[in-house]
Image (cartoon, rainbow, N blue to C red):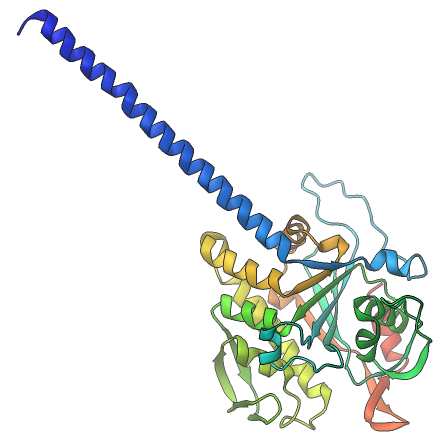
Length: 347
């Protein structure tokens, strides 16, 4: 072989290498573009899932004062000032999934579950206060979506506030009852709750008595059970066939579920399993309604990150102290002064 032929052969080999590099580069660029597009679509999809209500504009300034925020001098500052979030579980009838799971009738949705979640200044401890739906309260005048305002109502059922004026009236009624400013509002419907539990792979619960409720269609023997989303929702709705059949028995089951779900979330390994993380995020956001301060994925993620030090053993669950209503043995009213002392501790 001549030197010219060797050089020619070498030239051909050299010529092939840039071609291979260009192909690899184009493939890598295409992969990055597709990855960025997929990430962008995922963010858009999850962000678009969230529905919101502008509660601050609707209620104006006639509200309890916000918690005092204190400056932080730490190199890695923690959130400062306590935070109170009204969390409602609604029996919304909207959508086929909610209807199949037993959502409200044509009369409109109600707040089936109501909890005030108080986060301490460092976000390392929380107190969850349940408000029985059968509590008789003074429902304040609320702005209505149709225009104008409702008249105040005395001795009204607590959950009628949501049915009358949606999230705005629910927040205003809770603030009137407690004297505590609700910094945020979060609502999840039946379908969203069931999908969340399923995305987590179910939830383990331990019941101390047999449950046989014809209305929630749940039958469990006392003991530990692994529940799917539909069963967990039925447990959260169960009130007949346990205890005295009142809402207080159901609240005990709901509080147990809250702690069990926190345990499940902390042990799910979501950060190392992107596919499962997406399933959970999609389930949460799809059934979610928030105030405008939490209506984006960035804001929800920010709140979630601030709670990274919060574990189930640091969550205290209590029920607003109540006593039988003088006007109706099937209803309750706040028991004073114990109820007022509890709310004062959350300001």
